[in-house]
Amino acid sequence: MPNAAQNQAADFRSYYDLETYLFDTVSPRFAKEGTLDAFDFFCIAIWKANRAKSKVAKRLLARHSDLDAAVRDLVRMIAAAPSPRDKLQVLMTEWGFLLPMASAILTVLYPNDFTVYDFRVCDALGDFHSLTNRIQFQSIWEGYERYVAAVREKAPAELSLRDKDRWLWGRSFQIELLQDIADEFARTKPEVKTEV
Image (cartoon, rainbow, N blue to C red):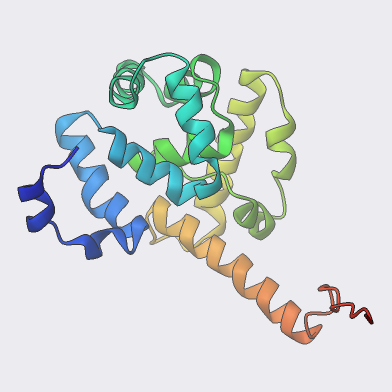
């Protein structure tokens, strides 16, 4: 937990764009130090799915009495895992994370090897939506490997893996919004007024 002097020196604007904070600060710090604290870990969880932060905390506290110790243990296990497959297995099999959150955590820690499993990217790829329905880890891993290969293949070649993910996400966003505008947002239900 930061002390008062650290709070006064902090530029709180760095948290406004959480993705930039994660990839410009947290990812390089992890590459250098090989560890994370609970604050940075929960920044990843919030970036992926803010609504899930309490579930993530519950999952960690089921194994440790405090969040910092749990995060240190989890990150130590990930770092010790010898391969990308093993790193994902630590998160999913040993800690119970689902693929979207597990892939987000690993994307921040290892941005050249992992990309976020996300429905928008699945939409842009036209595939992989059912990957979260798989139960056996080996099947999930094989599908995720194909997903990463498709992300690498379907976005412009000169982009990094992280930027390929962003490009595909943005493509899906644009297509959906243009369609909503063309449909005049017809998929939304009109407000029903009741007389009193």
